[in-house]
Amino acid sequence: MKPLILASQSEARRDMLKNAGLVFDVIPASLNERDFENKFSDSAPDKLAAALAQEKALFVSAQNPDALVIGADQLLSFEERIFSKADTKEEAQHHLKTLRGKTHTLISAVCVVQNGKALWQYCDSAHLTMHNFGDDFLEHYIEKEEEALTSCVGCYKLEGIGAWLFDNVEGDHFTVRGMPLLPLLSFLREQGCGP
Image 1: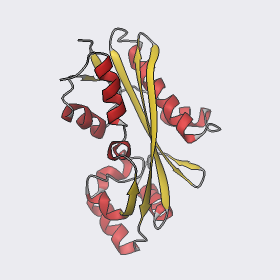
Image 2 (image 1 turned 90 degrees about the vertical axis):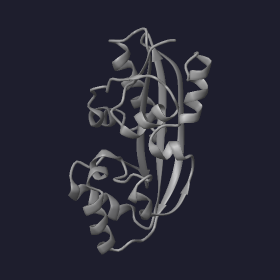
Image 3 (image 1 turned 180 degrees about the horizontal axis):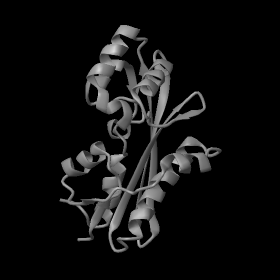
Image 4 (image 1 turned 180 degrees about the vertical axis):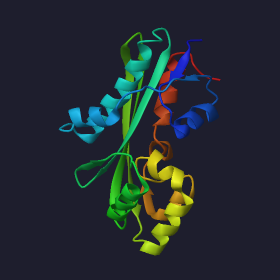
């Protein structure tokens, strides 16, 4: 079986692959995502997410050419603006106030690279509508969910108390969590990977 590497430090992506029964190593790609986003700021959000996923996989593939390297990225698009992960609790609070009562789009891309060449790529979107929560609720949420505020692009984990932020979610659950898993598993099955 070909060695498999996840080029991401995302706990959600790691859990998805582990729960699917895959055996893999984790080697996060050390890229400056904000610089990359700025370089491709004129690109459509799905093109940017796909480019970031591929760049992460290529970075790790350079040191591990024989392995199948999985790169993934997720962007949040709202009113023609891309939201990056918040750096501070205050920035997260501002993001959540901006998104409340409105619908935003999560775009998740995944790419598999081997020997420095992209073998396969997939991108998917989900649309999430936050309810119009008040400031007291927001303060309580920020106190309870401090880790997600700066580790997730939307400042929430839908699989946790972040679910309380939403009225409606349209799209694939795995896409919302950061990686379109089922199409990836179909590709990996073709490559002879699997439990």
